[in-house]
Image 1 (cartoon, rainbow, N blue to C red):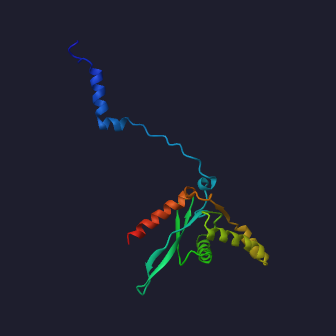
Image 2: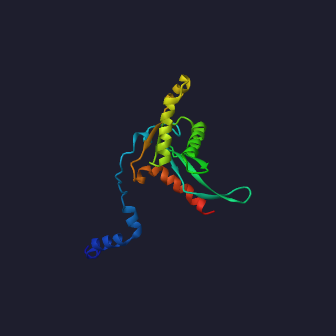
Image 3: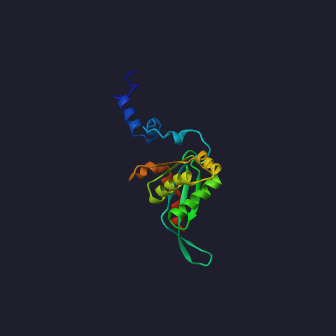
Length: 181
Protein backbone atom coordinates (compact mmCIF):
# COMPACT_ATOMS: atom_id res chain seq x y z
CA UNK A 1 0.00 0.00 0.00
CA UNK A 2 2.89 2.31 0.72
CA UNK A 3 4.23 1.89 -2.84
CA UNK A 4 1.06 3.39 -4.42
CA UNK A 5 1.53 6.84 -2.84
CA UNK A 6 4.78 8.74 -3.38
CA UNK A 7 6.42 10.45 -0.46
CA UNK A 8 5.24 14.03 0.04
CA UNK A 9 2.73 13.52 -2.80
CA UNK A 10 0.40 16.24 -1.56
CA UNK A 11 3.24 18.80 -1.58
CA UNK A 12 4.25 17.82 -5.13
CA UNK A 13 0.64 18.20 -6.38
CA UNK A 14 0.30 21.61 -4.67
CA UNK A 15 3.56 22.79 -6.25
CA UNK A 16 2.48 21.70 -9.75
CA UNK A 17 -0.92 23.37 -9.36
CA UNK A 18 0.61 26.60 -8.00
CA UNK A 19 2.93 26.84 -11.03
CA UNK A 20 0.18 26.10 -13.57
CA UNK A 21 -1.03 29.36 -15.18
CA UNK A 22 -4.37 27.92 -16.30
CA UNK A 23 -5.07 26.66 -12.78
CA UNK A 24 -4.23 30.10 -11.37
CA UNK A 25 -6.65 31.83 -13.74
CA UNK A 26 -9.53 29.53 -12.82
CA UNK A 27 -8.82 29.79 -9.09
CA UNK A 28 -8.99 33.61 -9.03
CA UNK A 29 -12.00 35.31 -7.52
CA UNK A 30 -13.29 38.61 -8.91
CA UNK A 31 -12.11 41.72 -7.11
CA UNK A 32 -14.66 43.77 -5.24
CA UNK A 33 -14.29 47.43 -6.11
CA UNK A 34 -15.58 49.95 -3.63
CA UNK A 35 -17.18 52.77 -5.57
CA UNK A 36 -18.70 56.01 -4.43
CA UNK A 37 -22.39 56.73 -4.76
CA UNK A 38 -23.44 58.47 -7.95
CA UNK A 39 -25.70 61.51 -7.67
CA UNK A 40 -29.44 60.79 -7.88
CA UNK A 41 -29.55 62.67 -11.22
CA UNK A 42 -27.26 60.09 -12.78
CA UNK A 43 -29.10 56.95 -11.67
CA UNK A 44 -32.79 57.96 -11.66
CA UNK A 45 -34.73 56.87 -14.71
CA UNK A 46 -35.35 59.86 -16.95
CA UNK A 47 -35.76 60.64 -20.64
CA UNK A 48 -32.62 61.24 -22.72
CA UNK A 49 -30.98 64.63 -22.22
CA UNK A 50 -33.00 65.47 -19.09
CA UNK A 51 -29.68 65.66 -17.22
CA UNK A 52 -26.86 67.03 -19.37
CA UNK A 53 -23.13 67.66 -19.04
CA UNK A 54 -21.59 70.36 -21.24
CA UNK A 55 -18.00 70.95 -22.31
CA UNK A 56 -15.97 72.62 -25.08
CA UNK A 57 -13.00 71.32 -27.02
CA UNK A 58 -9.93 73.31 -27.79
CA UNK A 59 -9.55 74.79 -31.25
CA UNK A 60 -9.87 72.32 -34.13
CA UNK A 61 -8.79 73.20 -37.65
CA UNK A 62 -11.22 72.36 -40.44
CA UNK A 63 -11.17 72.92 -44.19
CA UNK A 64 -13.93 75.06 -45.64
CA UNK A 65 -15.36 74.61 -49.15
CA UNK A 66 -12.77 76.90 -50.77
CA UNK A 67 -9.81 74.93 -49.30
CA UNK A 68 -9.13 77.53 -46.61
CA UNK A 69 -8.49 76.42 -43.05
CA UNK A 70 -10.64 77.70 -40.21
CA UNK A 71 -10.47 77.13 -36.47
CA UNK A 72 -13.68 76.03 -34.75
CA UNK A 73 -14.66 74.54 -31.41
CA UNK A 74 -17.00 71.69 -30.56
CA UNK A 75 -19.66 72.02 -27.88
CA UNK A 76 -20.42 68.60 -26.44
CA UNK A 77 -23.77 67.97 -24.78
CA UNK A 78 -23.92 64.54 -23.18
CA UNK A 79 -26.75 62.83 -21.33
CA UNK A 80 -25.72 61.87 -17.80
CA UNK A 81 -28.03 58.85 -17.67
CA UNK A 82 -27.92 57.28 -21.14
CA UNK A 83 -24.51 58.61 -22.26
CA UNK A 84 -26.06 59.87 -25.52
CA UNK A 85 -24.05 62.63 -27.22
CA UNK A 86 -25.13 65.78 -29.06
CA UNK A 87 -22.37 67.72 -30.84
CA UNK A 88 -22.49 71.31 -32.06
CA UNK A 89 -19.75 73.06 -34.02
CA UNK A 90 -19.22 76.59 -32.70
CA UNK A 91 -17.25 79.34 -34.44
CA UNK A 92 -15.64 80.65 -31.24
CA UNK A 93 -15.81 80.22 -27.48
CA UNK A 94 -17.74 83.41 -26.74
CA UNK A 95 -20.82 83.55 -24.55
CA UNK A 96 -22.94 84.57 -27.54
CA UNK A 97 -21.84 81.55 -29.58
CA UNK A 98 -22.48 79.23 -26.66
CA UNK A 99 -25.97 80.64 -26.07
CA UNK A 100 -26.82 80.00 -29.73
CA UNK A 101 -25.47 76.43 -29.46
CA UNK A 102 -27.45 75.87 -26.25
CA UNK A 103 -30.58 77.27 -27.89
CA UNK A 104 -30.17 74.94 -30.89
CA UNK A 105 -29.58 72.01 -28.52
CA UNK A 106 -32.68 72.77 -26.43
CA UNK A 107 -34.86 73.24 -29.51
CA UNK A 108 -33.64 69.95 -30.96
CA UNK A 109 -33.59 67.77 -27.82
CA UNK A 110 -35.86 69.68 -25.40
CA UNK A 111 -36.83 68.52 -21.93
CA UNK A 112 -33.53 69.46 -20.28
CA UNK A 113 -33.95 69.84 -16.51
CA UNK A 114 -30.40 69.85 -15.12
CA UNK A 115 -27.17 71.05 -16.73
CA UNK A 116 -23.77 70.19 -15.28
CA UNK A 117 -20.69 72.09 -16.38
CA UNK A 118 -17.34 73.31 -15.19
CA UNK A 119 -16.81 76.86 -13.96
CA UNK A 120 -15.80 78.40 -17.28
CA UNK A 121 -16.70 82.05 -17.69
CA UNK A 122 -19.01 81.41 -20.66
CA UNK A 123 -21.03 78.88 -18.64
CA UNK A 124 -21.33 81.20 -15.63
CA UNK A 125 -22.40 84.14 -17.82
CA UNK A 126 -24.96 82.01 -19.67
CA UNK A 127 -26.44 80.84 -16.38
CA UNK A 128 -26.83 84.45 -15.23
CA UNK A 129 -28.35 85.49 -18.56
CA UNK A 130 -30.93 82.69 -18.38
CA UNK A 131 -31.83 83.73 -14.83
CA UNK A 132 -32.13 87.32 -16.04
CA UNK A 133 -34.55 86.34 -18.82
CA UNK A 134 -37.15 85.39 -16.22
CA UNK A 135 -37.01 88.86 -14.69
CA UNK A 136 -37.05 91.04 -17.81
CA UNK A 137 -39.76 89.31 -19.84
CA UNK A 138 -43.02 91.27 -19.65
CA UNK A 139 -45.33 88.81 -21.43
CA UNK A 140 -46.73 86.50 -18.73
CA UNK A 141 -47.27 83.55 -21.07
CA UNK A 142 -43.61 83.59 -22.14
CA UNK A 143 -42.50 84.03 -18.53
CA UNK A 144 -44.61 81.03 -17.45
CA UNK A 145 -43.15 78.97 -20.30
CA UNK A 146 -39.60 79.76 -19.22
CA UNK A 147 -40.27 79.04 -15.55
CA UNK A 148 -42.15 75.79 -16.37
CA UNK A 149 -39.21 74.64 -18.50
CA UNK A 150 -36.86 75.75 -15.73
CA UNK A 151 -33.33 74.53 -16.15
CA UNK A 152 -31.20 74.02 -13.05
CA UNK A 153 -27.53 74.73 -13.70
CA UNK A 154 -25.06 72.91 -11.44
CA UNK A 155 -21.37 73.76 -11.47
CA UNK A 156 -18.67 71.34 -10.38
CA UNK A 157 -16.21 72.55 -7.74
CA UNK A 158 -13.42 74.75 -9.05
CA UNK A 159 -10.18 73.09 -10.10
CA UNK A 160 -11.64 69.58 -9.91
CA UNK A 161 -12.13 68.26 -13.45
CA UNK A 162 -12.64 64.67 -12.24
CA UNK A 163 -16.13 65.72 -11.09
CA UNK A 164 -17.05 66.08 -14.76
CA UNK A 165 -15.74 62.66 -15.67
CA UNK A 166 -18.82 61.52 -17.57
CA UNK A 167 -18.52 64.31 -20.14
CA UNK A 168 -14.71 64.54 -20.12
CA UNK A 169 -14.45 60.87 -21.10
CA UNK A 170 -16.81 61.34 -24.03
CA UNK A 171 -14.89 64.46 -25.06
CA UNK A 172 -11.77 62.28 -25.34
CA UNK A 173 -13.73 59.79 -27.46
CA UNK A 174 -14.56 62.58 -29.89
CA UNK A 175 -11.13 64.26 -29.99
CA UNK A 176 -9.09 61.09 -30.61
CA UNK A 177 -10.59 60.31 -34.05
CA UNK A 178 -10.37 63.99 -35.04
CA UNK A 179 -6.63 64.06 -34.34
CA UNK A 180 -6.06 61.18 -36.76
CA UNK A 181 -7.19 63.23 -39.74
